[in-house]
Figure (cartoon, helix red, strand yellow):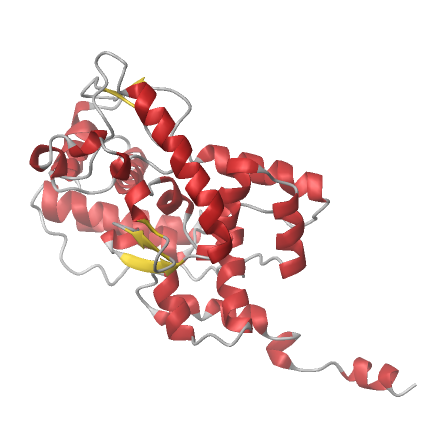
Length: 325
């Protein structure tokens, strides 16, 4: 998909400042939507009033969630405050979205077991890590071999959401399948090193310049590598990238069908289930917050709603009536 020179310049501006590809893609989408909303006029001709009108449109007509509206606001704030250097000032007048976020879909432990039983090999390991460590899908596919600490039963997550680092738990039952997976990665690396022009794994930030041979060592290889070598966009270097994240939800949906489960299941369903089951087992909500990498405990508190039996934990009078008969 072609990008206008203006939008590409904004993307380059963010890339230099080490914004993640996902954030760059999201910001580009909302800046483009803003330009279209204003009849394709250049943002330099627009300003505070047009931004307010756009954000209000998102809440009133498109009925987006508060988080989506907030993302659009962040994109436009970057555009004006940092890229164009035309500060917007206070934006207190736009209509805030009040659409309620959906309660997360959570599997029971029996449903998780049935889902995992419908998987095998690498796919089963991926699903088990998503559930067993509460990882986001993007965090999982970015894992390197060196991030797995089997001695301390933990996983290092680098540059998660908000560019934050954290440690998450690792189930001891996954140590053996992880060791098999790492051995497989080692075999792939041995093959890749024999390929002319192989440039090694892509390293984050300036690490590739600092440690020039590290990208050809086992520790820096992606834990779940792609099926084949490919040319990196932009640099045209021959690398083995990580697994395509869209593949995960595809095989989870198939496993859901094979297991006869009725709930809609995606990678985030397993993360929701991880959090809920931790709370059910008596874990402190602050601990769960840290494991999930939430900045605000209020985000984690949504899982306490899932735990409550019935509305607000109220027992229906019908249960009392029928229980007495």
